[in-house]
Image (tube, rainbow, N blue to C red; front, side):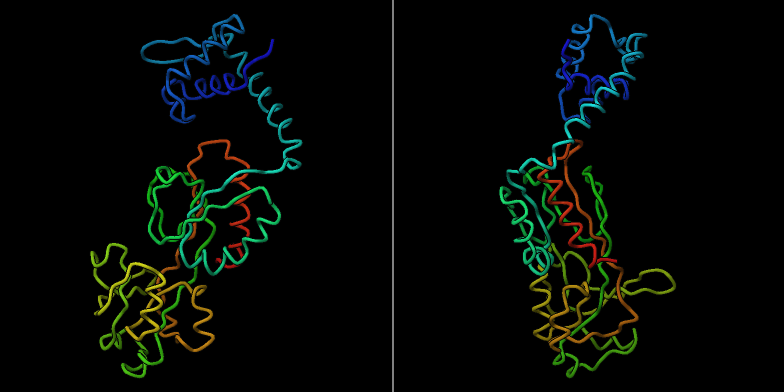
Length: 299
């Protein structure tokens, strides 16, 4: 007797959740598909594994005996499949979305190393500061900077980016270098807003263990990290940015750090994907490489 391993996996999920509908939702399969596979497994075994009613789905005596053996069977099958996985050449495309600065300053310069190790892979890289729709965009994974919304995606937090406040020397000569929160009364911010002006310009700072916001004036609003940096370089005001992105400007003196004791909250960095199980190896390889690349740069 050759059992259909997919049917066995589906049966175990139904047994775990007690529902064909919930099992289908977790496995990205229709309820009818789930029912069809379980029924085919029962016919193959010649026994009823589940008792079905309008209110509940529960195991029969035969089903209870089969569950333990089925789990061992799948564990053995997975172990057998993994034995030679490392030897297989990984082929295909990885479609990913990354924030502009991290992509340009960190990831793309090191991407040749990854592709040299995986010559049959192709990376399709979207770079944007907007939050893309992972499912509609067909992305295998995305890197997010900032607080995550409840998207239903699988997420792993990699760490946080330390922040700093900075401005151009020309701006500071014109307005003076702020030494305290009160000094900000004479200053302006470059306002960053994805929706261009739907929120109020404010300076975020830590006080007594909490992060507070101080409203400020701004004469320019941008919705892109490159434009945000460019506006600071042009002397439009103070910006609050990840320290990682500013190394070259601080090193050259094009930007100067101010109010180091009043930085805003560090920004979380997370990697997300939409796979409920069995993440393709090509995607796992890319996400592992990406997280290892970023880890030394994060707190």
